[in-house]
Length: 271
Image 1 (spheres, rainbow, N blue to C red):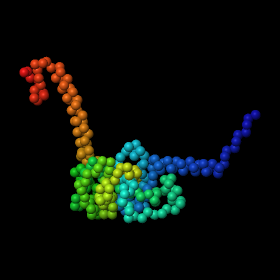
Image 2 (tube, rainbow, N blue to C red):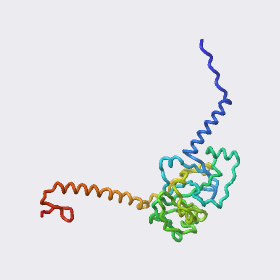
Image 3 (cartoon, rainbow, N blue to C red):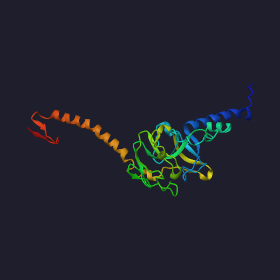
Image 4 (cartoon, one colour):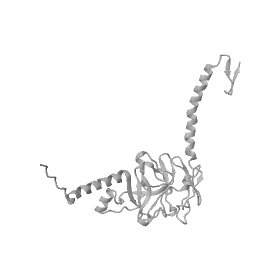
């Protein structure tokens, strides 16, 4: 005689478990993968509008990825950037939803700007522009707010960006308190890569604003990274010197006693 099968548990009994699983998954996604952020100001117009919700890739930094020129990134306040901005007090529901990543956090002091230069770069903007990175002029018409000049009202530089830090600017140059305005603080206006939460890769809300946030073509122009590329080349030359000296020593050891290497080191000559 077969045993009677247990009746399936009712949906209402399983609902609390399903909710807990969903919350746990949402928390994992928010912590390690993707997080939503709300745009609180006009500093990134017209790329981003006040009230837009963007999704930020938090996974790449876990694998050693670093901010790159042209990316729109979210970063924590480096210290003193948001002193004058009041932080709204969220209600309990907002706190729970933001904690699990279903709603942008209202308490965290985060900013969103475009990366203009990275560690090792020299960046400057004179007069009305253009912005130059390693001597190369950026063509910023694709994202610069209409009517703005590249320097805004704050020319700067040249500034050498320290390794491990980035120089950031808003797309609405006349309405963005970015790296230009914090040169008197620690880091001289630059932001540590450790403060970067991740790259904003898409506008998720409102629906009619949905779009990706690619890196503009001007940041791919030839020569922009020339200063950075010189370092590996120099390193290669330096590492080749010991090998050349070692091979030369072996050749000398095999030559007859009455033969010496000439002053040029190219051809042997007799004594």
